[in-house]
Amino acid sequence: MALIDKASLLMVPSTYEAGKLYNVLPSGNRAPDQTGENSGYDQTRADFDFDRGSNAAATRVNADGLIEKYRENLFTYSNDFSNSSWVKYQGGSVTSGQADKDGGTNAWKLNVVSSQSFSGLYKAISGSSVCTISVYAKAGTLDRLGIVNMSGVDFAVWFDLTNGTIGTQGGSNIDAKIEAVGTDGWYRVSFTQLLTSGDYFQLKPSDGETTPSGADGFIYIMNAQLETGMVATDYLESTSVTGKAGVLIDLPRIDYSSGAGALLLEPSRINAYLHSDYLYNFNGDETFNHATSPEGVSNATLLTKTSASDQFINMAWTGTTIAASSDYTMSIFVKHNGDDVNVRYEYNNSNDWGGVAWTALFEVRASGVTKSTAGNCTSDVEDYGNGWFRLKVFVTTGASITASSPANLFRVIGASGETLLVYGAQMEKGSYSTSLIPTYGTGVTRAADSCSVTGASDVIGQSEGTIYAEFDFHAYAGAVDRGLFSIGEAGQGYIDAIYVSSYNNDLYLAVYAGGSGQVNISKSNISIGKHKIAIAYKANDFAYYLDGVQIGTDSSGSLPTPLNFVGIGNINGGFLGDFDTTEFTLFNERLTNSELATLTTL
Image (cartoon, rainbow, N blue to C red; front, top):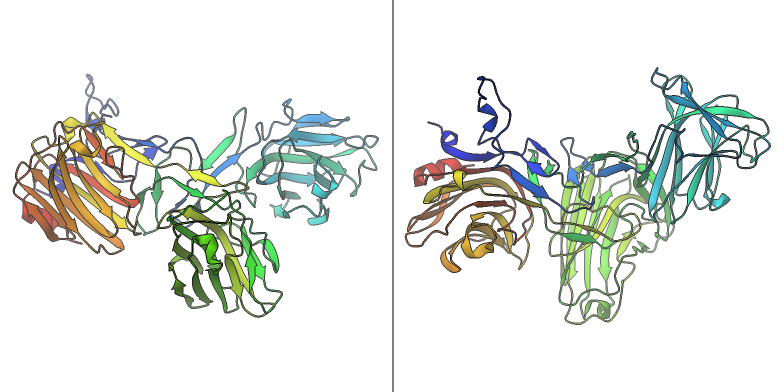
């Protein structure tokens, strides 16, 4: 008999939806109904409940190796311009049923009258963040489309729908693009800027870059989108509710950073930088949306040095002070752009860090990135593929802090004219880096991932059993407990539980019954990478195996009771972890030590 045939619960991260992570075992969908046919999935007691609060700040690396974010079309009625939320202003009107870019009739005719200065279509928007507005458009009797933020002409752009070019635009715009779609004269036009609350945008057809137009007339439009971020992403249809895609709220993150799909579970973190992608405070030249980033879209920024001296990005960040005696991690993605430049994270005004000065140097070359440090910091480099590397710096502050928001931390070293691609800046309080938290004008908190099931006593061995997991250990936590998995009595925390947790780079087994410690077996110096672990339990008979090796046994100790809770990445609600778990399995029998060795051999 294969060992897997003995399993009472098996989780592999392949089937999931918002709020749920489904198990392969127990397989309730095999249970027939009274007619003898499959009655559907009727054993949900062992499926994991998943929660990440109500925010949409989480990202993952998807199966294509790209960073994937939450996406939302903030426009309602994105292709129903007859809806009252789209204001037909000063004689502007729309006509449905027009030939569209896909061969259907889902486009609209947008008509204006020449006698009115603001004849057209507009919609109010709210929020204060970097946003991109996009719409598909085609010339009709008029061949220009203006997208105008009614806050002022400095926030406008004109598109030529005959030649596919961008005309006059305001100096406050971040970016504008026009892209041909198909061969029938359709374009997708987009416009990126930092919005302020209370703005509203107008779509304004014209026969030139004028308001009002010189003649009555029309253009064709379809599929409008408003989204946070630096570029227009794939269109999401919306009706009375916004269109959503990507890493949705409460959707388990199946992450492919290590190749195979793994359940990514992280504690709550804040990216204190106000802008993760809009890196605009460089005292050289910057070109936004210049190249493809680790997201697979063109939102990477090109930095061009204009001086032989060090030049820096002044990354504004939220908060008034840096916390004393605390760990911080700073990170940014970089890519070689033909020039051998160096990047330095540095702070020598030690008063701002409580008497701590530090420097982390990264040499960015076509062959890769090398690192070195001085002072009270360490550093790391992570390869994200396609020439992109994530630079990481870990700093511990001193006992007292006297200043706020230190600037000029990120410096580019090289000759005038040399360039570097950058993306995804992050500053988080913690001793290790976590996945990218996108920010568009404010510091953002990503809520903790929670994955657990209660009322599962029938799939947990009550008097004996085995717990098995495959996971990726990818970062040291420092002096912080991180839970890998646990079983125990629901609501009792670690005082009635069997669990595995990491502390620094140790991975230890602990058993508590009635608040009293029963077993503690530890393995130190866990290497970063893939591991297999198995824990066997029975009264006075415990064993811990890692990667085919027996770490330890204990022939004394009681079991907690009852065992009705299973947590992945947490210890009954506490000790929130940071692991990529590719498999989690329960057996309701204590496997033999020989079977444990076989099960965990890499």
